[in-house]
Length: 571
Image 1 (cartoon, rainbow, N blue to C red):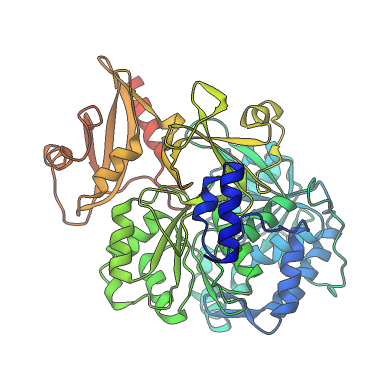
Image 2: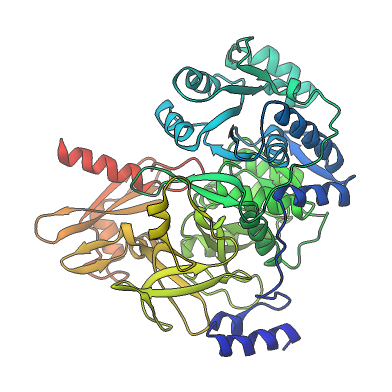
């Protein structure tokens, strides 16, 4: 046993942290985690890996030194616009160099980044702008995005829109073609005091000293999170939170070669999983970030074959789409060392199939926006337990609390609510002290997830408390049913929710998407499930659909299915 494993094991017994007995070699659970401004992580990388490639956007490549200079110019430009500690700047962008440059420029000027989904409708934009106090928005000159942002200048507190010209960030040949062939996709940008061109923002000498921030107190990112119900809330992620999570995730991959990896960036940076694991960790590791503005399976497969990324973070639906694509065999993924799945539960059958077909290692992690977000992951070496989210990351403590008494910590093997603590846990919800007090109690974040921890410290999630189906007095967990449905070879996606039942109170309803060309009846699927789930778990209703609704990051959206079902019941 290595020295750190021996030390970890002894601490596990002494402090009641069973995961330490199972901790991977060369990873210290109690390793020191720096407390510095988030922009400092990038500054260090820009110096250390100056000549190395940093960003690749559709063939246009930037070195770390080039991006570092652009970040400094952006910081000076944002400061001239009035960005300083406390000022909120929105990023409503797909994955582009503009996102990266603006993100670190805002942080260096002392401002707070507020992430916006470019697909938000006006109602969603308006709520988030007003709730967060966003004063400046950075976006693109595309008709798909800009008109909705422009409308916010008239209806909200938004003061200034900084507009990046799409053609200016493309490689030279693609830029010319875009201006000629895609002119109809460009929005007309007013020439007035409330608009500023991103190139004009950068038009300075870049001589800028980072504004001093308090890493523990100053909010680096306001990350909005909703869940299946309720109004979205802004999780206040401090500089210390995000630096800690970046270092925690990086420590979990001790074989990463600093300055030599390529990170595939198809998950959107505005989603907290991609922001931390792809962007922040990728840059801290000196990796080249190979960006795609959206997920298209064939484009991802071709990019993997051409650019040979070594790291491929994703969500389960993304891996399923790649696996199901007819060209997957023509585009081998031999360059990929690790695939990290997050954002949603990873079905075990998908993990087995993906690893079998591609030869890639696919590990499941777990996190939530309120924790920056990554809290646990399966080890890359050692035991990878099926159905488990793995072990707590360095510095993170997990506890299972009794459902009827949140103050009571349960022993291994007992089912309860997952609670966790660590340096990555948010400062609270923006403007919602009561909700913060209900969610963070005595330093522990109550996740709303139901799970168990085994004797070796591996955590297994059963389901979300809010997704729990009470069926005839019994607790039915949708994830258990979904896992069983995914075992059918013709199933691409499955989502289970609870629907009203006059007799049982609630019954499970399954929404299922099949492979193209496959056919199946509800009775045939029930026959397949009979030896895999109990009678109480058997879906009373099964609805087949050509496609299931997804969030912007590619997670299956129960929220839409629940709202649709409720609307039908009321109508």
